[in-house]
Length: 475
Image (cartoon, rainbow, N blue to C red; front, side, top):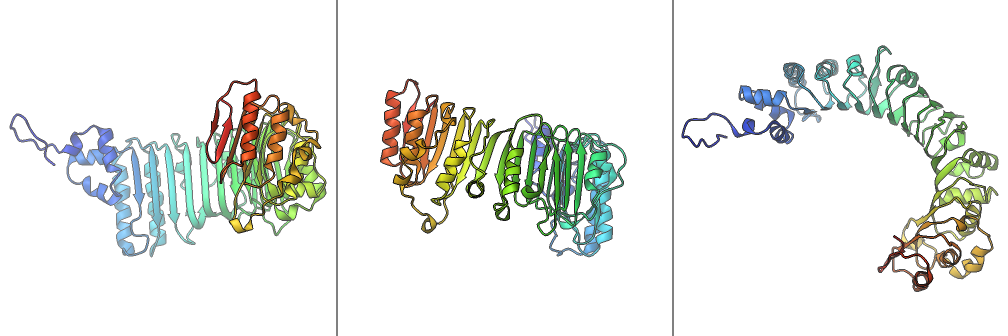
């Protein structure tokens, strides 16, 4: 590792430490923590280089238990000392991945020590992946007291996670908890009282927690997925994005109340839709809905759900949910504020009238319409008789939205119902500026002819392109 000396003098400076720090630290990122510790013993310069690395990744190389527990404890002791030697050298990112083996208490205590001392390095982001089995892990309070810490991600591998007594103030902005057992129903209240600056919160696969109540003035994005809650209460003045995905327990009569006056995006799927009460919002927002099958036969609940979406400006809905609304005579519904719609469509014949009745409720405020198909096994696809849904079929609905429509994207399957719909839109959508038609197979000839004829007679000067499975008009 010796460098060349042009003067002919001896030079003990190695090439690694002679590089700019950011390059040397990038090289260290390819080493394991064991190799970094070994390198720090080579020389004072190497030690200083290792102790000033702003990114520290500690991964347990013996999670499978090949290494004896006393050696693991001794190595953790050395890591604690190693971090102590950093003193206050800045850490931007700390990643700690560790799984305990034969000495759970000793290893857990040392992991907590390690975190405490790492926090003295003014860490910005911390990611923990801990596999402690049934041995609970208590997050050190120092983690939340660190003013520099803005992001904390905790992956518990289905282990038990505990939080300290709510005390003090945290500057944390992003918090993610994944695959954790939290048998404490006050987690939401704990976050509300300690994390006053929190902007984004993700809870995924949280077990044994029945109640989650959160009240926050700063929270802007919240996602709760697969948590099996009995009681969910959210009050968030600044909340803009809310994702609820199988958040509630199907076996119990659950409660879900949301107050979010500034909500912009709502994605709701699974059992939570049945119990969701969305208090009146002051602003318009977008929503994504996938209704559970058991919910599709409840007419009163479906009508109540539609009424709560009156402020929605962007809506994404799958074909099964659309079918359920149609079967329960909930369509057409006056979505007067909708400006953008995405329909995820299937291949059942009955879905075509459902689409027609849904579109009938849209107003001239609609600007964008996107209809896409997801393809299952080819053997399961039923080719629809396009002649049943011709131009006259679509004209019979007397659509209002067509007068304001400016952009449309259509993903089709050859032989389906879209020929009549495209023919209708091209004849009546006078403000249409962009149209894209794509297919898994080649574009049907009739559709291509419709679009070419439209371009030739159109007053808009826009680009026209055609490929085997895609044809487009617009800027």
